[in-house]
Image (cartoon, rainbow, N blue to C red; front, side, top):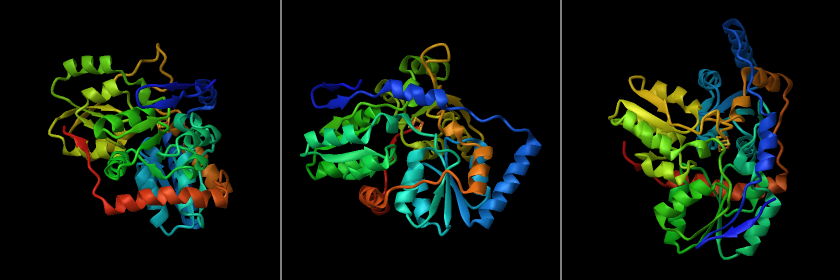
Length: 363
Ligand code: SF4
């Protein structure tokens, strides 16, 4: 199943693609609702949020209707770093996290006194699946001289084993900070993001081998062809994309950094390599610009996601309503584990609070 491979300065475990496929086969996109039913769901959910002193926290990759509902009801829409900050700072008794499971777990770890619900507990992430805690712990044990930095897209148990947790908006800055202190890094789980950080900073990094099934499908060749079609367009890419795609991009950044770059760009056409859910916010912040999704392998090839995360897509008005009404799909993290995972998570939040984070590239 998993195997260890080595290269010049990295050792890696390959992702368990069979397990990822099994999860994907269970991922079902919710039915589209008619206008009247959608309105009724939204009104009922707003009422329940008020009654339960709850806030809806949604990721940019979730359906536009959930993003709008979060904002209209006093909740929040953001990337995983911002979601974590909002959840910790807000005074609600209940957080409803529309996203994937690791986001709900992070919210619970940072706010153990709050009830954290999710529209579905089935929504996971290929990076989380491909980094099982026991194998990861064994990998860390083999390299005790390295500072362990894990991406937020991991389980509570993997976070508990780390020195630092980072999101894509802060990863480069944290690794640069560690490099300045002469530290060597063990990085998990996203190999593309890890390799991007390694190339950008020159840090000594050992990489785990896993990938996001959505971003891995963006193709450099197709993107180069697209650039010929839109020679004046800016290309913005998420660092979970393969390195050949990132090399073509004008800006590489997290979802929030992509949104800011799109807003500030002088270009009227913008090609975007990340989940299509972000287009809702992009069109809100820059309605005069044209956004074009970067090419993936396409439906006829190996693409199982095609710029749409199947797990993010499992969040729906129906599942959100059910979870709020029944107080179901609650996230529990064993207190001892949560206390351990809180240390690297809080380290990231403190670092973010004390540092002006940079955006790389220009568009
Ligand atoms: S888009 Fe990729 S990284 Fe984000 S939750 Fe989906 S599989 Fe995970």
